[in-house]
Image 1 (cartoon, rainbow, N blue to C red):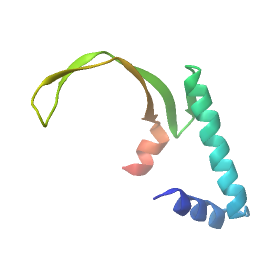
Image 2 (image 1 turned 180 degrees about the horizontal axis):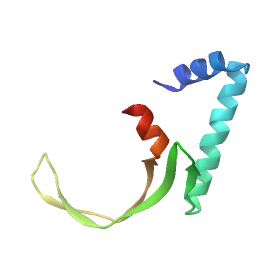
Image 3 (image 1 turned 30 degrees about the horizontal axis):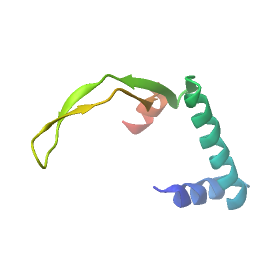
Image 4 (image 1 turned 90 degrees about the vertical axis):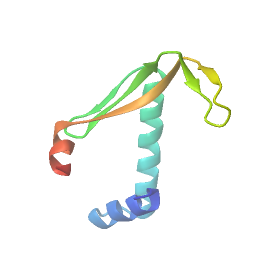
Amino acid sequence: MNKAELVDAISSKTSLSKKDVTSVIDAMQDVIAGALVKGNKVSLVGFGTFQVSKRKARTGLNPRTRETIHIAACTVPKFVAGKGLKEKVK
C-alpha cells in the first residue's frame, strides 16, 4: 500500500476529505521525524514505537570488487511493532 492508497482507505472510513487526510499524514510524519531527530521515541500504544538506534562501525565487503570497506557508525530510525499490531497480523 502506498501513500495514495492509504489516503483513500482512511478517507473512505472517516468523514474527512482526501486533502485533510493527506495533511494529517504529512503532519504525523513531520512530528515523528522531528522527535526522532531530537533523540526521543514516539510510542503509539497498541500500534508500535518509533525510536532511534545506533549502529556500530563495521567492516563490509564490496560485492563488485570483493574489497573490504569500512562502514562508519550511524544513527538509524527503527520501528518496533506493539502487541496489538502483532496480534492483528497473526
